[in-house]
Image 1 (cartoon, rainbow, N blue to C red):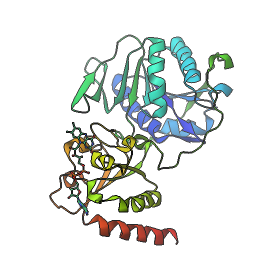
Image 2: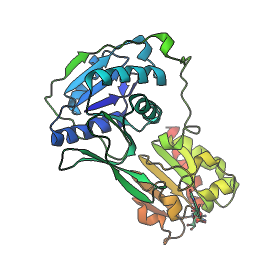
Image 3: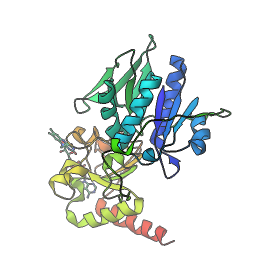
Length: 326
Ligand SMILES: Cc1cc2nc3c(=O)[nH]c(=O)nc-3n(C[C@H](O)[C@H](O)[C@H](O)COP(=O)(O)OP(=O)(O)OC[C@H]3O[C@@H](n4cnc5c(N)ncnc54)[C@H](O)[C@@H]3O)c2cc1C
């Protein structure tokens, strides 16, 4: 089983570590090895932590054209490696990179792809079974890929968590090479600039501050924006807040909006209607602020604050400002 490792600025992305830990568990059941693929790096700095998270082998492909992610570069490299080594499965995080790369690669390889899985299991026949949401998250589908050929599976970040590090594992680092020329890559990365939290796609954000109709009117919106900055959170909301034009549609959570699973979500003045909740119920930690103690959102919340936003938000902003000022 192979896992594509994403790394940025010398650090492995947590979503890749989650996939790697889970692959270790599956590989034990399926009695096979786990190999972590690192592109655009010698792999040396990552080898130990990858071994601790379950990699038996670290395959590093150090190539100038793979130093930055491009769809063409990664697709071509992976196609060559998979054709040559024929892994049973390639796992990727269903991150922005994974969502871009996996369908392209699956098409090139004519391989089966199951994307955005929440659960992966090995069945009694030793085959992989993947479970993902379908029909706007109203049902869960359990799927099997085409057997006998490499399958591609992307795993939803933030659902499985990173397992405990396994001590005393020796990494087996092996360089691999690919035949890649600049003419095969149709895009060039001219620069990379960090998106500020307010512009970050809400499905990528680790911390989300969401608000709904309970905001009352637009006068609290600037305070919510400031609160988001102080919490290093992305702003999002219910359909009501989009209907009120306090937020743009790309920030809407729910059945007709986006399905997100951040590490933390704070829901302010949101009732928790089913069409909203289905878009955030897999968040790891849920805080809800509502003046109605019977609001359904409190059933999902890890921390429930019964209070009026008109009082709670200015007070919270004030305290965080004071903290930031030291
Ligand atoms: C087909 C369909 C698809 C839909 N898709 C979506 C979707 O994708 N996303 C979505 O969000 N909705 C969706 N909806 C709408 C959904 O049913 C709800 O109407 C919507 O989620 C309600 O938004 P809300 O919680 O902000 O507002 P409300 O339900 O009006 O809740 C406001 C909450 O704020 C609280 N409140 C009020 N004042 C204060 C205050 N001063 N301080 C603290 N709390 C206060 C109230 O107690 C209440 O709980 C859909 C509906 C349909 C029929």
